[in-house]
Length: 455
Image 1 (tube, one colour):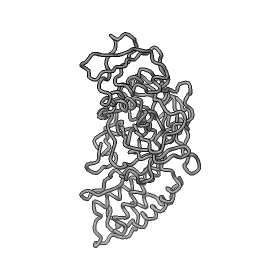
Image 2 (cartoon, helix red, strand yellow; image 1 turned 120 degrees about the vertical axis):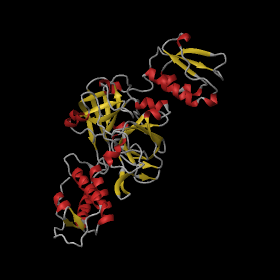
Image 3 (cartoon, rainbow, N blue to C red; image 1 turned 180 degrees about the vertical axis):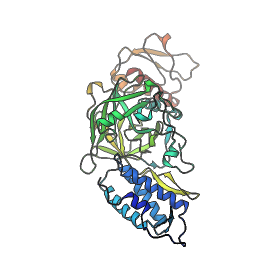
Image 4 (cartoon, helix red, strand yellow; image 1 turned 30 degrees about the horizontal axis):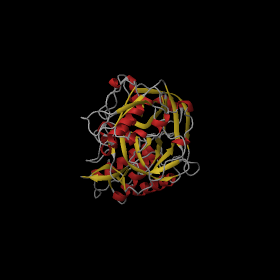
């Protein structure tokens, strides 16, 4: 993006350099706060690493300043200033540039805020899926002993009182997920160059309350297998990167993902990642709005930092895509005379929606290592129960599982299920028992546990 001719020092200190007059009062605290917010946004928007999010934030701050102080004349640091005209010119310049830019980071709340910390989520399947998602953190931000920066979300974004998760730390810049024991997928705009590969780490298990990472949680990017960032206007909108990690990930399973076809419009979706750099959040309650060539549009509750997050089919648990673009995340407000940021909110069917690169267009994942629900071990045995209460006599039969049984999810039609690596019934531990019309949730939990043994 070409820099505009308007220089920041001129904007901030030399606008209308007329001599001070006694009748001009000092600038109010609110004016100074908003003025400094523009300064900060300007520096971010025109830094070497800036993207569409930083420029969108500058537009937002400029609009807020102009709405509040466009005609204001006051004394700032002893000089008389009336920066409205310069601010207005800068807004026009940046806005015209924004028209040709893709919004490269996902953000915004649709309807209710559905974000939940992993350990607070009651769904066992989603907690298991979260185990295979990772946070992209700047290498320099992880201390030698694994300690993470202490700055909180509230401090980073100058959040208004009452905003959620303000007290949590937020060192992550993007998200990713495991598709092979040593291969991870993220958004293409998160990993564009070898320098990105070298300068960032990938941390698994960065949950709320974690302030120090163990060595087994942190992995480096060994190489970029593929990175693509396509425009929605001049390409198919696909945005993805596939990277090889420095070693196999311990204690975490590659995620199963769609390999053909596409999800139906209206289907339920769940996203797992790091909104605004926070510890892992699970956000459901979303649906597919529309289907485009290389991406789908949904009403997911996502923010900058969610880029690269896995978007799952809420029913099957398979990855449907990668979160890559969306609406502006925060908007300015004034509380007790102080400028602060609030989460941007849209109706469930409002705003433009969040863009999700279809996983089926992603290239670079070694095909031989792609996990699926049909990749099971034939020496695993299962037991089916026809019991209406846990206190009665058990009626069961043991059988060897094959691809057709587990692949068809036939267990979910039964009244009870148990699984083990041995046909010896004395080795089995009951997973779910009860009446057929009351055990749906339990059976889903058992099925998830069962799949874990298969993959």
